Amino acid sequence: MVKRKSEDAQLSARAATGKNARFAESPKVTKTSKKSQITKPTKTSTKPAVANKDTSDVEHESVAIQIVTGSYERVLHGFAATVSGDVIESDKSEEAQKEPTYSDTFLFAAHSSAVRCLAVSAPNEAHKRVLATGSTDERINLFHVSTSPPVVSSKPQLPTLSATSVIENPRNRELGSLLHHARSVNKLQFPTRGKLFSAADDNTVAISRTRDWTVLSTIKCPIPKAVGRPSGDTAGPGEVPTGVNDFAIHPSMKVMVTVGKGERCMRLWNLVTGKKAGVLNFDKSLLQAAGEGRYSSGEGRKLVWGEDGEEYVVGFERGAVVYGMDSMPKAIIRPSPPTKLHQMRIVPAGEGRSILALSTEDGRIIFYDLKTTVEGDKEDEEVPQCAAVGQLGGNQAGFTGRIKDFEVLQHKAGAPLILVTGSSDGAVRLWKCNMSEILEGAVEGEVRQVGTPIGTHETGHRITCLVAFVMDGPAEAADDEDELAQGVPEEAGSDSDDE
Image (cartoon, rainbow, N blue to C red; front, side):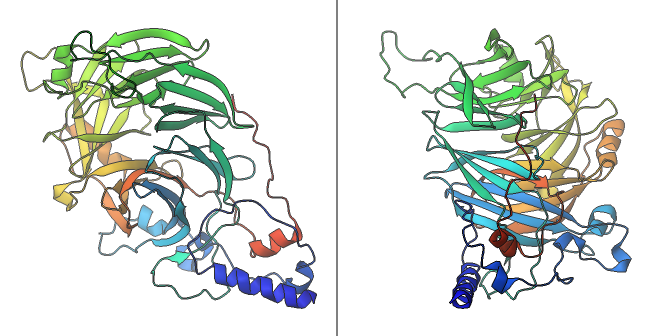
């Protein structure tokens, strides 16, 4: 009878592999006697995908990247891209490069409406990261995502219509949901492993503790006054645009800057006391220099601090402004030709430099040196412009779709940068870019085409947000099903706060 039950369990497990992979809802480990019937000796043929290499590839190991995308179709899609080390380190042309291999890890509808933002924490002792997803349904869903590279099983897989293999990781678990926001969630960030910051359209920034997911504090931003409405008009709730568009936390974890809807200003907050530290209004001439037209809203849309914390950048619809620690504008960023901006990231440059990357509507990623300025096109401009040192993609490279979000990764110190871009057409592209190419453009003072495309993966969904990280955890066991059947505890460490 025990043998018959074990065979039924194996058949049901194999049949489940033919469906869309998703997170397990709860770690159900109840049958400990199943191991006596399905225990197998250790197999030498089952190895991590990143460890399968010939003797000629010993010099450069493969790099596994976990990519998670959110979309308008409510779908949360996670897949692992394994890039050969020779592709990253070599200088071969695009035609001579080896295409990365992709494996779906999970694919399911995570929310009841469009996914707006994603955030991933630093790894813990159990080699897991916390993935947070925000949506217009007012919920924040939490998941555990493993940092171990995908494991190629020796068991035969069921044939599928998709060319992408499915490698479901049983260590990916659903944690639950947070319901402390009353409107759409716009921004999520893990400044440390122990804290989660979330901003929403209810004009609040909530600070949650990851140990027990308790809301420690809530920063309430004032509701902006209605601009351009007749005097005496009583606007009902929801008729005036409200909400926090974005926030940026200083590396010292003591100061935070926020920008919101319906107001032409930014607010500084003291995170030690949780109170307002000041308000800085955007000057009309400064907004015009940043590309804001007469009928534009003039509200800040994106925020990011520099690598050294000496300056921060406020992004608008068609430009950006660089501010110093004294909250005075230092430089203006205006892409040429003019286009809309979607995302901003700081590139790890070192050497006392601060490189900013912007994604645009016309499919480019433009790199700017925040420390170097040039004279503006107009003589009456009081604030100089930041120097563009390079661009990736665009019409010159044959890519014109808007880049909604992107990530900049570096698997080890001194290695080339790996850029992961997500477009509205559902394509996720991987690029390789040497930091020396960008710095050479800063020295020569000209905009150069940098980066080399590595591969493209079609998700089939309209991407709204994206996160990615290098899967640098240890290789997992050969058979995770056997490990769970033995009753091995899932957690191998604690989620203590990193203050």
